[in-house]
Image 1 (cartoon, rainbow, N blue to C red):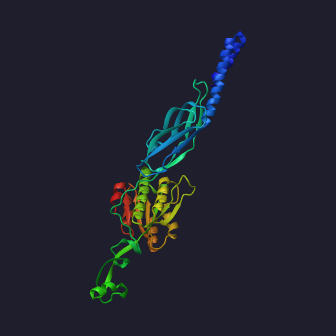
Image 2 (image 1 turned 135 degrees about the horizontal axis):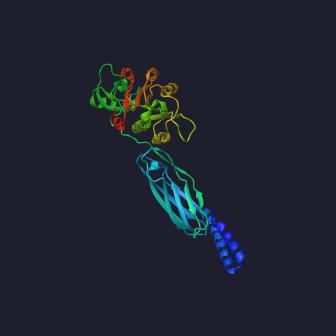
Length: 392
C-alpha cells in the first residue's frame, strides 16, 4: 500500500498536466479499487468469528485433536484468507499451522490438526493470525489475532508392580503381614476356641451349628495416608543432568501418587517448584482418596518447573509439624547430605514413616552412602524410569 498511494498521486499529476479524460477515468478506477478493497477487507475480516476446540487435558503420549471453526457473519465474502496458528514445537507439530482459503458470506469453514503429548507441560495454543486483503493485492493485508487456549499434558505414569510402602496406621484396606494390625471387618476363617481368646471374637452362629465354640480369624491390614513431597529446588540436582533427573523426579511423584490412589488410599502432595499459573513456589494438597484429587495432583505436576526455591531439607523441616502421626512421607529429591539424613531421623521420631527417592546419575560421596545404609528409613537411588519400575 505504501507504494500504491505515491503511484496514485503521480498518476493524478500526469492527468492534470495532460488534461486527458481517459487518464482521469483510469485514476478514478484505481482510486476506487483501492478504497473499496480497503473497506471490504476490513469489514469482512472483522465479521469473522473464530472458535478453537480441543480437550484441555491429555495423558502423556496421547494425541489431541484441535479443531478450528471460522464463521463469516457478514454478507461480504472473504476473497482470500490466510490462517496461521502458533503451536509449541514440544507438541510434535511444526512451529505454526498454516492454511489459505476463502470464506463466502454467512458460511463456516473447519480446519483440524493433531498435537502429540510426548512432553509433559502447560502449553499455549494460539494465537490464530488471520490475514486477508483484496482480490488484486492492492490493499495491504489486514491482520487479527485470536485468543490463546491452554493444553495440560500430564507427566508419564510408570507402573509399579513390586512397589510397597510402610505404614503405622492399622485397620485399613490393604493386606499386611503383621498380625498386630488385624482388621475385624475382614474375616478370613474360623477355628476352635482356645484359652485366652477374647469373647468378642466368638462366632456364636457357627458355634451353635457345630456344637463347639468357634472364634473368627481376621486378616491383617493397614491403612495408608501418603504425602508425596517433591523437591524441585534447582541446586539440589546436579547441573550436568539437572533437566533429566528433575523430570525423573516428577515422573516418580506422579507414579507413586497413582499407585496409592489405585489402592483406594489417601495421597497428598507438597511441592516447592515454580508454577506458571501462580506466584507461590509451594503447593500443598491435603491427602484425599478419589481420582479427581489425583487429577489435581497431576495438574500441578504437569505445570511445575525447577527453580531457586526452598531446599529439600528446609522443606522437610517446615512441613513436618503439619503431618499427622502415622503418615507415610515419600520424599523425592536430587541429592542426600548429612542435613537431610538428620531431618529424616527427626521425622521418624515424630511418628512419620519416611521413604526417600534420590533421582541422580551422580554417585553420592562414600561417607554419605555409608551413613544412608544405616538410617532407619529406606533410601532408593534412581537413574532412570526402568529402575523406578523395578523398585520394591
